[in-house]
Amino acid sequence: MPSGSRKFKKILIANRGEIACRIIWTCKEMGIRTVAVHSDVDRDSLHVRFADEAACIGPAPSAQSYLNIPAMISTAEIFNVDAIHPGYGFLAESSYFAEICEACNIKFIGPPAGVIRLMGDKVEARRAMKEAGLPILPGSPDPITSEEEARNLARQIGFPIIVKASAGGGGRGMRIVRSEDELGRALEGASTEAAAAFKDGTVYIERYVESPRHIEIQVLADEHGACIHLGERECSIQRRHQKLLEEAPSPVLSPELRNQMGDAAVAACKKLGYSSAGTVEFLLDTDNKFYFMEMNTRIQVEHPVTEMVTLADIVRNQIRIAEGEPLGYTQDDLMIVGHAIECRINAENPETFAPSPGLITAFNLPGGPGVRVDTYVYAGYRVPPFYDSMIAKVIVHARTRDLAIARMKRALEAMVVEGIKTTIPLHLKIMDDPKFRAGDISTSFMEYFLAQNGAKKNEVVATAR
Image (cartoon, rainbow, N blue to C red):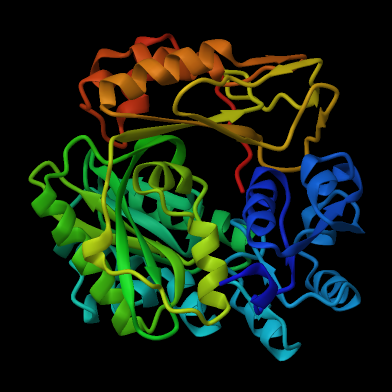
């Protein structure tokens, strides 16, 4: 569609940082004007500089700025935008926000509010996906209401089990339980943490899979019933359920297993009436059996690795779908070429994981063949302490996984960030790790890796959005 005939003339980006910049780049290519919103401490961020228009919507705390729905909608109306792109985090999976946008005749660039609400409730999501034919781990069909109920169910399932927040995400409100003696404390701890993080202390339990792989399937669905998948991402390298590094394709998935998982995800999305980009996340056990874990109804932090191996612009597709355009291609058109790896560069001490906000005194981005960097910072920028610590993503693409690892090493060695501490040294060590290089990874990889590399005992949990 030529830029002059686009349905959307102006889009407000209800986010900050690198994802706001990422959305701006695609909007510029599509001939769509952009409005950046920012808190008072983010006025010097690159997303503010590169948007066509910008507005301050509140002070630094997220609740008073990036989570402030009245301020967001007021800004959208003042600037007369056609649509709002929520990015990831903040309001991206708020069904209420999607409903408010619709009520104000502003297109929410994402799936229908009802689907967001359904997938945001992990208990209901499990039930819906089971009905849609996806394999589900044994667990509680409803929220847990008492310790006795949990105890009886745990005996049926068998230990270990995991307690999870129904409204959870980002690893919060989760506890692994290996015996009945631990169950009471785990229920109380998970519920308390979930109530503080999500204002909902509801929890459920399911069987815990030891050292699985975390595999996610990227889907695209239009508003006319068409849906395809763009292959998988390997997201197993995590610390305390926070992803550190992702790659596509997975080192272990055969074409047959890829098609099986992808077809299952697509069938489920069609049954849900899903539209927009989305990610169906699975656990893959050592027998290559996969189980539905959750669905993220938004763009993912790690979407660039899929873009690199498929040449798909996922943000462009989100916008086109929201404009009412048909997807325009089928599953047979999908090609996965080469291998891509993404490293999340966080403003953290690489040994203790303590946040390291502050002034960036020198900043150099790597270049060369197959290297992409998504960032919002620069030399002279002061990283604020109020938000997620990720300041950049380094993504590489190469013909083979071995070459992608070598390329990532070269890129990380050329990246200069001075004035604050970052996780670049951590990622360089991972690139050299024999198990990683062999593709022998799981969600417990970082426990092994940190033990091998003398992790500090006083690790600090990194802030996560």
